[in-house]
Image (cartoon, rainbow, N blue to C red):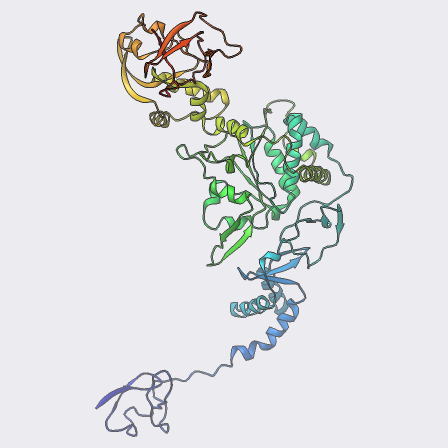
Length: 567
């Protein structure tokens, strides 16, 4: 006896000798690819099996509707990039995502709610029929889609829109030859120095170019209520919503974010969040401004897109973030524009929402203002009064890494001197206030000073009390009379020996003239005295002693900073 199943309802039945002996009364058996049992085809259907009504094939029933839908939708022009397979439709001069338009058109055509399957079939038909490579999208670098047509940057003329010129963005401005912007220009003269206006004009004009020939990142700096935000809003109004984004600097390193820069002319970031220990990551910023190929992940998909970014990065802030990248590749990219003037809210001369005095009436004039800056920039091949990488680095470093700037500008690293912890931190805070940047956190300050080469965190007796001090560092402002030395710290007062210690601020020249003082430096002695290097004991002749000045001299034998003791 063998137990097998009914081929239709899976009901158990018993076969005794052969298939002809039907164990399941009124059962029908059929041989098929889904492992049903071959049986006597003369048998009837099992009592437990209820046959379903035969439904016509969906392809047969939907075929007329499909043809009608495609006929209605093909009145439009479509493109489908091969990488993302997202269908785009030509609408008002540019290409936009087509999915919502397809749903709306089909529901309006049939006046009923349609199945998701049917709409997806229509969508797939349009995808297959309109394949295009992404390289052909936004490839017209010398043209700009405006509200009144395609503007040619070289000829300064407008031609009608054409679906053959493929753009995914359009500026929110019309070209009007000869249009001016007197109110906007007046505002710029109030917020910027006259020599900085050409740089701003070229920066705004550069944002019209769908390319990145000059590798620059723009930092607009000011301490608040200084007009830079009004300029940014004006720039966004000219470009239009499809042409700019507002992604923060920190967000650029996250997944799926870079895709949002595709087809944008500008990205304006607010003040970066300051990572006190590591600072901002410059890797992504360098790629975005360097004409590198960007590989961006597409959200809700396993697809990626490859493109060359032309969205100009403008960062606005009241202070600069910490940056530890000291490469030329980074600092040569940085363009700093300072907005020095502050307009208080309660000032009677301050105008609220001042951009409304030139928007929207002066939009075409501002566009012409930007065009002038762009053409001057391309003709010169550089931004007006562009600073060298080293000059820009010094300016930026003071505001982005105040600790390092404090060390270089206010301190001297040398043996046999010290600063108390409180004196060092207090002076650094004063320095930060002077340059207008955020004070260094005390804990971070101590950690970084301990890690500074030549500086040691220790304890010394100062004026009879044990103090935590940093040995090997002094302030440049300290002169011979008030400079703390290790000898002073141990005895509580200057000894006769320590009073003879001098600090040389002359530049060492290995010639018969010995040491010569720098021009403009005053002297405290003009007698020729023999000194020795405290480290190696080499005898040196010092003709003049200078106080209260920088110490950058080193012994030619042992390469140690000079602290010379009289023999």
